[in-house]
Amino acid sequence: MIRLNAFGHLENGRRRGELIAAACELVKLSRREQGCVAYDFFASETNAGNFMFCETWADEVALAAHAESEHFMRLVAVIEEITGPLKLEKFTF
Image (cartoon, rainbow, N blue to C red):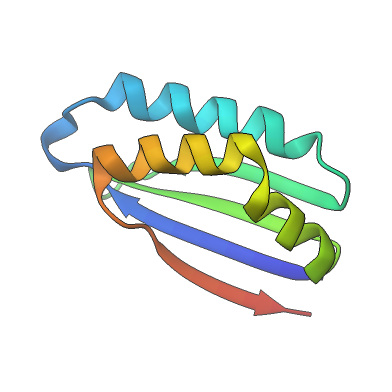
């Protein structure tokens, strides 16, 4: 199993609606992928503007397919255009 946590920050709430729409679409489409165990999006209640994606994948093959999917490339580009690069942490178990 592979766990990815991706962290980002939205300054001053600008384009928050756009960010949430893109994140929700990414979650919905990613959950349908083969090998996706879990895929969630969270917004911090203690640090305004902070958010994270938590993903769990069955294996490297599933993760690689996800990274090459049309929806991933399209929606992550939108998200990072709004927030800047996401910080990624990868864990295995």
